[in-house]
Image (cartoon, rainbow, N blue to C red; front, side, top):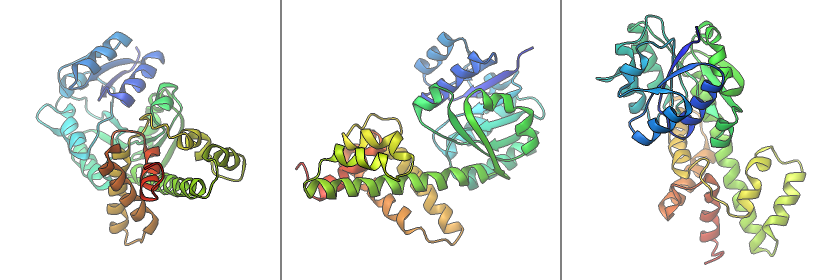
Length: 293
């Protein structure tokens, strides 16, 4: 018998990951509050339900992709939460990027209800989710992870376990700290170069072939051409930078570049670019330098 996976949250990421689970031969029971998301999942072959509790009732594994800490808590532990009906010992993989402390609290409550909750955030945006090339960062019970590693393998190209509950999210926030600061610095450099008479596409062609990290191969061309197709929105990174700030405060660790990047992302959002790709941080530097005004 194939495993039954309950997937809670069938939006951009959850929908793509559900499709890959179906392709891998799993039975998927899905839930999303949006009827159009449920319809897409049903068209792909999933069975959908009207609540997390109904979707999770027969599941061997529960997966989730929802926006905020409160959403994760409601999805699992709310009035119609998945753990009201789930099997004893069910393993939960939460792919959401939320506050590590909030995730740890949910894991503790889940344990009281007989469930094993792991934080399993991913790096990679919609294209990587569609092609099952996400990178999964895991915090929580390693034996439980390995017992259902096939579920994670169906949606990713790499799986790394970093420690107890919260460790996967800490790693995700560290990774996003680096990405957010790096994109801000590159945007600043492009603006300075263009203000000095250089062509941004030529600059990027040079930097992609120089000793510049891989992020330029992924984001560089779109950054140079001001393509803000929303693969990972400014407001999502703004939320992650807030979580990074909270994480740094808890660890009594100064993160000046992340703090500066947070202000850049807040300003970019305030300029009206919150719903487009994080590459739009370039607009902050362009506008403050008077470029293209």
